Amino acid sequence: MENGIGEKLKIEEVLEREGKYVGPTVGVSMLPMLKNRRDTIVVKPKTERLKRLDVALYRRGDDYVLHRVLEPIEGGYIIRGDNCYSLEKIPEEDVFGVLTEFFRKDKHYFCTDKKYLRYAERRIKTYKFRAFFVRLKVKIKSFAKKILKGLGIRK
Image 1: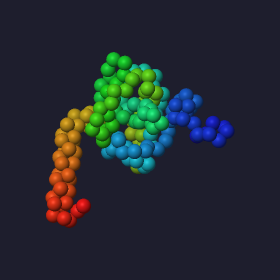
Image 2: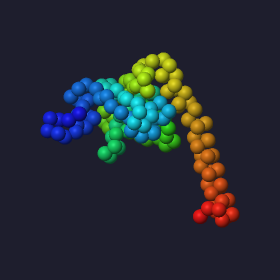
Image 3: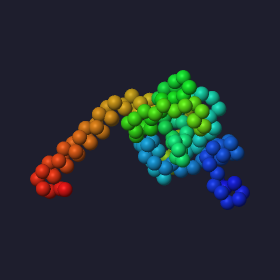
Image 4: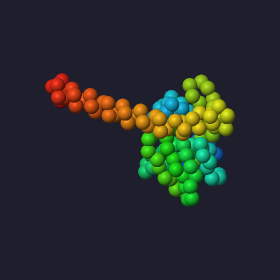
């Protein structure tokens, strides 16, 4: 969307002007729910304090970030992407939008749907299990590289 003089509007400006932002996703932090450049999100302005499982939109430098609220805390939120393994503490004032619905392939999902909320809860509950296997995979790859290097197969 442009501002009338050929400049692209920031998402914050679109939210203020239109009352919602509809656009593609970019990145892998919310996999498997949202796929890079395939899915479409609908974000509305944040009008109240977010709750656990909400997906917040905020800025990190020049980048927009869409991550799940794990826990509201005093003055902000503990947040993490569904496909990420580190937590972020985000101040309340940095969050300006909340995901309300999305289109995945040709299916439409609302973030209030019971099936969606079960998925979101499962992503949070299985985090430690998934993180363990990600760390294990990294260690195995590192070990394999050392063996291959020792055998002269790899530099």
